[in-house]
Image (cartoon, rainbow, N blue to C red; front, side, top):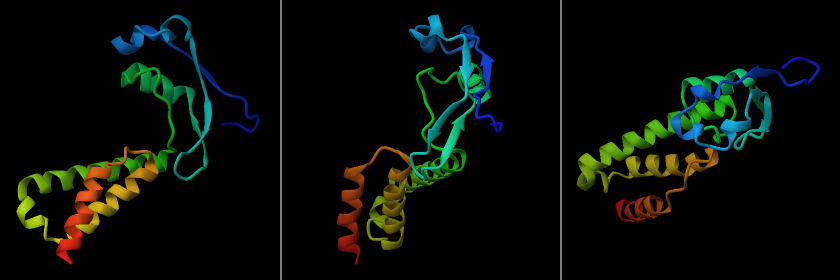
Length: 140
């Protein structure tokens, strides 16, 4: 952003949107993208969903036009890192439940990842957290 705080705009090409977005009401009225200022859900820092990022997100990546940013760049990257680690925990669990249910280190790390993930607006998994707490109580 420049010092004038004036939002930048870029022309939109809704014909490049995903099929789902092309069926939305937005298809009829969105003709340009405009920088959108927001506060990060996690760190509360000011951030901008730039017009050029919107064009890439909706026209190249084909994300739904109703998708909005809630995390700044660094927090989004951290949320993706956490998601990858959670998927790895799920994969390990699927392959070795019997052994891992008594592994306090693994259980604590997985529980911590689940807890931290909620700060990044990832959906809480209360059932999995309860299961891990129960196993931890028995593993100690």
